[in-house]
Length: 79
Image (cartoon, rainbow, N blue to C red; front, side):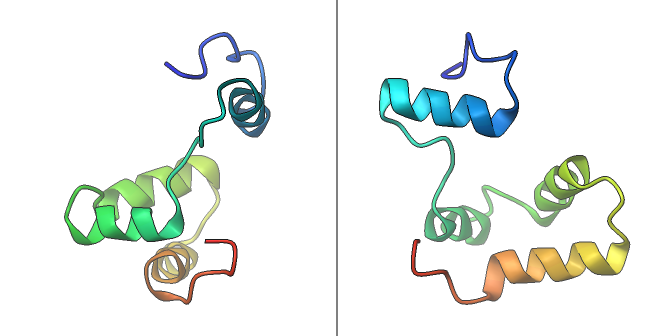
C-alpha cells in the first residue's frame, strides 16, 4: 500500500504526503481513467459505487449526471 503510514490522515492529505515523499500520483489522469472505462477495466457500477461512497446522498439523477460528466465532457486544461 503506497499510503501505508498515512492511514490516520484524510485521503487527500495522505495523497499529498505520499506525493511529496514518493513523487508519485495517487490517481489516474482523466484520460487514463476514460481509457480504463472504455476498455472495460472500470465499469459503470464501479463508478456508481465509488461516487455514492464519496457522496452518500446522491440521487439517481445526480449520479447519472456525474457519471456522464466524468466520461464525456471535455477535459480540463490540467489533464
